[in-house]
Length: 379
Ligand code: PMP
Image (cartoon, rainbow, N blue to C red; front, top):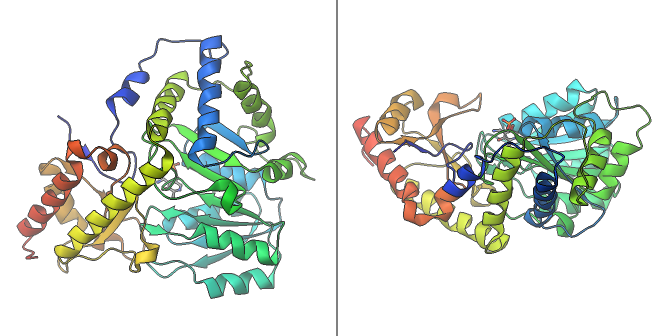
């Protein structure tokens, strides 16, 4: 048995996902793979709850970060204004990526453990016309959930043609997300978090109008691999069952993703989200019983993917993480500059949340209680 990986991504694998990677080598343009890849692209539509035929899925070798590049390189031209709503480290990194490609970024930061306020957002939106607004749906550094649905409404009220793009790396397949109903223009994600596939895939979904923006730029995108114009026809062809080539996909990763998507859609995405909410509530209640507090202080800002947990005074992450490991549990260290060593992160996504027979969540909570007690903390 291996230690149970309960960091906020990569997460534990279901055996079937892992086994589907051991596929014999096949041509990336052969009929068998074309069928699987095309099907996987179509399944992504269901995962983000879109039936809009103009919206476009993209699955590209890479990781979550490549999603930022797609947005920054294709949807903004140098000098255009972008509003970035940040609730931690990953919002800041998204802003860096946009800046790298020449966007003029206005960044609003939430307080540690919170989100930028609706009043601040409204004020920013009234001051300038933004080409796009981005928000991190769940910031993995803080476990803060952002209310995307309300954001889209606020943006549409003042500037209907501004694109709203979500970083869903830590939210897709575990948080409520309705691409069409909410009116989103883009969600970027990756395989290794709540989706439960191996790391190595950039998974994104853009509205028809976002694709049009990417394809009708005044100045060509300053990217080659991350150029959406190169990928749109490839993705359309695969989904239509036609072989197509721009750069070689990884058949093994696509097989794993295909299995993961089928599993998470098996009983409907709604049921899977509800299970994550149930497990998250249980984790938050349990750490509260231990006398601990989540970094995300307000209930409505707490993600259901993970919990960032403040450690008791006098206990540091470097004290408690090795003790957890000795009990077969891996949590992650903090990742927020201001509160770094004072907290740890517990990912409760995917199979560990959905398959309660595994006992991962209770194992982790018990290990946390014992480890803190070994550090001299009395609950
Ligand atoms: N955005 C968020 C919210 C993330 O959690 C991560 C990864 N932890 C990324 C982007 C970057 O993804 P990757 O590490 O797969 O490049």
